[in-house]
Length: 177
Image: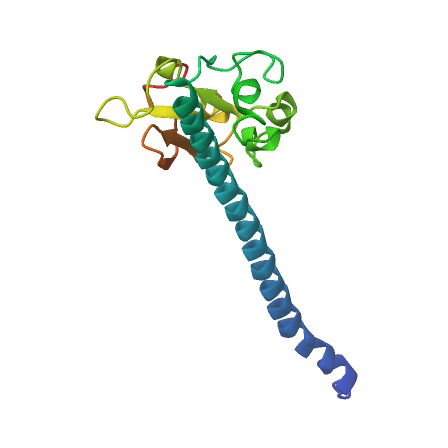
């Protein structure tokens, strides 16, 4: 029995697979980089919002002599007078959007506030004490079911104004452990 004659069309199809594989790999890398860039941009936006809230708290202190009397996390953030949203939005340069992390879980976004407040700072001076204390943290860090919104990490702003990225809630935050 004689071997089948050579068919150029049949062999040309096999040369296409390596190119398709390379194209698939390049496309995958580009999509992965776009996803990472998008998440990084949202993480940076959250940090900027926390610094903006810190600035509004500084203005509140300048006007009143102390930080506001706020709840840890109000049941109705858009209505409670002891909510960060009600106390600082508009009068101190914040918008409601500043009070919600762009990567927060949709149910948290719906409430209108994604940050918890350190109630130990109520009616305190912003610069009191020699060691920086946590002021605001992302509420998702208290959940055992929700992963950190920023590459499995969370943001916390301290009384000296710096924002720190952490992978779990520090023990000094109520409800953390």
